[in-house]
Amino acid sequence: MGTGDVTIMEKQVLLERLDEALKHEESATAVYLEHLRAVVDRLTNNKDFLKEVKTVFNYLIEANKGHQKKCQTLIDQISKEDSNDI
Image 1 (tube, rainbow, N blue to C red):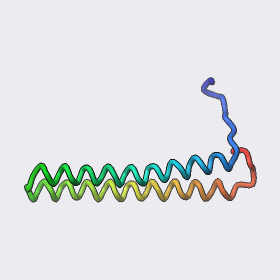
Image 2: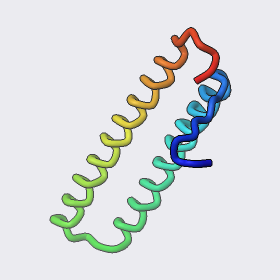
Image 3: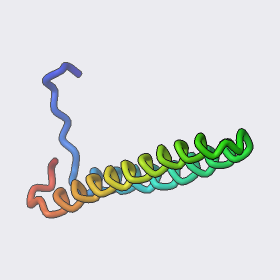
Image 4: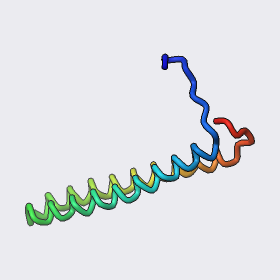
């Protein structure tokens, strides 16, 4: 396919794929953060470092929530489309 080629997908197929991607992202993020917390807990007891790590984790969690909200908004918008071909 060239750069200008367009692929048309049925709305329901697109919605199913977006929903599945959103579910995978949610579970993957939870697993990654849990593993990172476990590693950090074992690495150090340095309070300043742990505070900085917590700040980064909170940023990642909030950014992920924002991305999930955007994905859900996209799903909602596509759901409302009259056309079956997206």
